Image 1: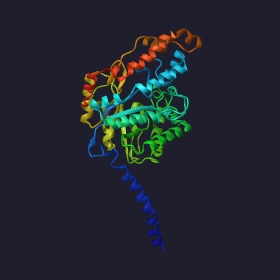
Image 2 (image 1 turned 30 degrees about the horizontal axis):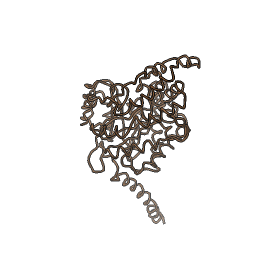
Image 3 (image 1 turned 30 degrees about the vertical axis):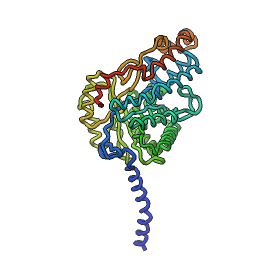
Length: 413
């Protein structure tokens, strides 16, 4: 009787094994980029070495790209604009900004310069009904990204979706548009929303081969906090939550996991292959452009035998960039430089500040902690409103300055 029970038990177990194998087969779907050891493999069987740029500022505004300093995160910028020209004009500005900052013309240009991949930073609020970039009800995240997907398809580019700003904040600094602490790691409500949004995104794009993968969080856990190690210990579990939410609806797309402390610390990872299609992503700004400078990252990559990708790098001299690109190519680490577009240089294309933009910058830097200070600092409405709409014209590709030296330093052609 015991023997027959064992056979029966194995027969019951077989469908479970078969289902798992089916997931593995689905993961190797010929329409999607797949993982083979340390390499990414395209649907045609050739290796994909990521080369490209980041569409920073478009769907997650950052102050320095407008030449602001103190006003350095999305909600700081929005509040400042509302104080400057009122909420209705601010909403009009944001709509025009989203319509014109990145268009199909920009995407074609990026492709022409030798890129094969674009990384898109986005704020989670684009998939909620929270107040964000001029909308106070249902947001336009899918509409904006759907357009980008079509532009990338036409140009022949892959797209990485990067949750740059997560519910509660994952970094605790201006880059995640947070309130100065990575509350995501301590708030169950924020964790649930983070999973809900990734599930929603994955369900929408599960059949889309233009999407290379989903990057769950950008630069989690800044190094400023006394409980940093405690937060680091929670990172892998937060990633597992996000992966589980995605895998409920999408078995095929790659999922990218960044290290702690500016995507540079991979020590918190213990269960390094908990999913069949994960890879890791690092960032680097400054320092020596040598292999030794990223040896810890290379060693981690080699130890897990999975792809490593430099999601952000840049803001340096052309000589430094060229030297470091050589190091990354020699060590099989693809890269997307940061950013594609901003005011002045150190990007693919530069935006020339329009006339009277200094009025906006001056207001952004002025003390505005009381209503009296806001009233005292506010410049002439006609001048500032015109300067803001002139910025919209200035940010259009046809009016930007192509930084050929910068682009050539990336060695993409």
